[in-house]
Length: 436
Image (cartoon, rainbow, N blue to C red):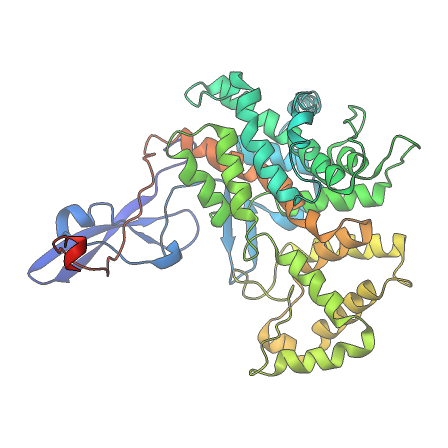
């Protein structure tokens, strides 16, 4: 292990089955439940463990992010997410995730400069975009373009070279807003807008998405701050499906661009990255404020398949620590842009009020989560729902890279190879086709 103290192994557990007794170490982490070390279980007992979805399995050591769902805690390198979202900004949090500590003023200035200087894409990648159909989903474009970066940036694909890993890190973080913005521009038939070095990370992204050559575009600081918070609040979330995908891909020695493309592909799944899109689609289905009681009644009916999207969370059992800060930004954005002529946003505000006051919501812990607020903000800004997940991917890239770098530097790393509980046919002989 690098960058942390190994978990203590003061305790052991005994497993007894058939005529065997196996002693397994119990690892005690710095936070979270103890972990039963089963690495030698197959060798000593000739048995596997069974854990579909790996929801009870620790597949790695990590020092990056810790979640306590019962307490509603999300810590990056020990720092609470609400403090980071309120007091910091995305590139400072990116530095923290990548290097383990908050940067000094000099370190932060250097990091921001390096990111800013790498926001341009190789000009030949313009032709790569034009190879897609105009109606291609932005996530399809992002998956293809990020995977193709290994064909354009040969000098940062050797994972055994620490400097090349660093160059790939900066390139991915710097270029992802350009890649996502260009995917959006291509999908709506507008010309690509090149990045500008005099703008901050979030403002640059908004300008590349919404400006056109025919007129000047001024980025509103309230919208820029809200965008930065969306990036910050989605930067990393421990060993989720897409992060685990990146780690599994990287365990084979694949280049960093291929690994991040794999993460984007996984995030595209509606069960993972599509929650804020599903939330907004639900708000549009409700349509108007007067129909809310009907849908509340449906949500309370166990026999009705309708479910309220954007409320509660699989991991956080009491509240989503990211939601409080995101609500603040949502309120600021809606005050700036207004909701008077937007029925969807009117429904969102009323549904939020009901969720906070209704005993049913309180009892079931169906609080508005980060996806509820981020969906509202992105819709108010003018993003189509097809761009919600690409923006999520943009933000999560820094978490994926941090996890990738940690894994590459870990001397315990080995290629991922899950086992199975085989329930198919046993050995049988081949039968010639004329005898079947």
